[in-house]
Image (tube, rainbow, N blue to C red; front, side, top):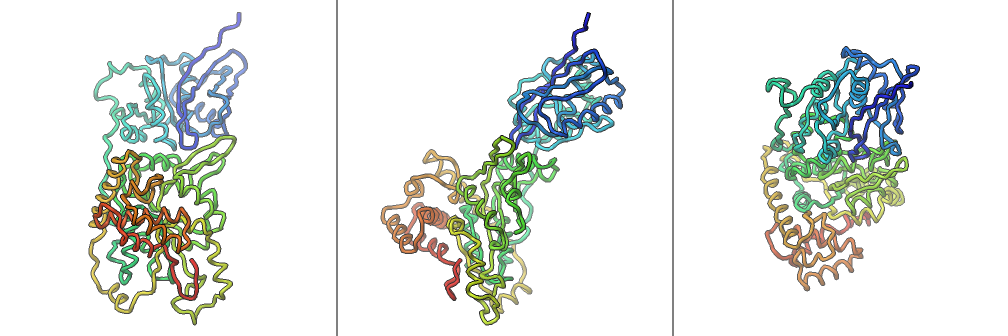
Length: 526
């Protein structure tokens, strides 16, 4: 008589884009020639898990079944990847072979195994925790290093350092354990550090009062910004200053950012504790997939890694036009959809775009036209790399001229003062007022630069006179409807900086000065 196969099941979670997906590892052990097969549409990393699981089980003193072993990872119609299936496969084999007996009916586990049985963390911890919070189970076993992420999301888990630890958890009922064993079951309390001192203080920006004002307005409303000027005028410095005056991440924003970062690598202590907004400096050699995301398994790109922070593009005209055009949709919608391997993944893309450029390739056509080696056609070709559609999505154009001789001396001799922290507190209060205004209107809490509501006049408290003035000015400047809306948002931020409940014509006039071409000299268009 043929003996019935021995079966066991262990639940797990795997990463698909930024989503944590539930899966079930089923193991059947049959009589027959020794064979170990894994099915369920897994990639090479899952197929390689056979050898890691075999070595881990033997290293822990257990016997690897000398029979036919079939492992199915369901749902079988979805592609899966990653080494996080090692631990559930090993536990399911030990359960099916009868070498261990669990006190728990529903087991959830994930983690990579070393050849000696050590349980290692895997990328995607935050997304996995979010998925675990919706799974009903008796016990959840995860790598010990992921316990702090579990504390962040208040998910009750048991951290293990090895396969032997995981086995001990399964065979020992929780109520009978000694309180002193094992201490790694207790996940630590999560806390966020205070913001560090700004890397570059706003007081370092000498001789550029108009740029300092533009930086403060951009930060107060989370507006996109484009700097232009000759080399060495402080464009890159200004972009770094913005990070120092932005308020810290909220807990919800921190979780969303960690969700992106954890999908790319294992999080470290600084990633978990820091509440500083990201600053992504992107080089002009960046590829389209590196910018917006992609690859075989569709990983997030730079625009997602800059979530709730700054995406800085230096030497903007040097970027390929294809890469720049990919930014247009994320700047409006706040997300990007990537389709790979018959699956579609949506990545968040809510960031402040800060860019810098020279007026021409050599950068001298305005400040030193006699030394400029660029012809008018070369200048037009250089600036044509930036499409009008992308320029239309910029809220602030800021031209930075060369500073005076006295300002140069001041940059060397003057003492640096700490002004960024003071501005950070003021901007945080301004953001809170913007959120309260959204709450009063019953709309989503956003900053002025991110607002996409249709009724801007009612939300931003703009009267009929001011609305007509803004529309007339936009018509004379040949602004698009999008440009007019960005003008209104910028005016509201200027009014917030002056603690004005209503938007006045003076606020619109100042906003118009940031919507004009960066330089009118020599008919240089930007």
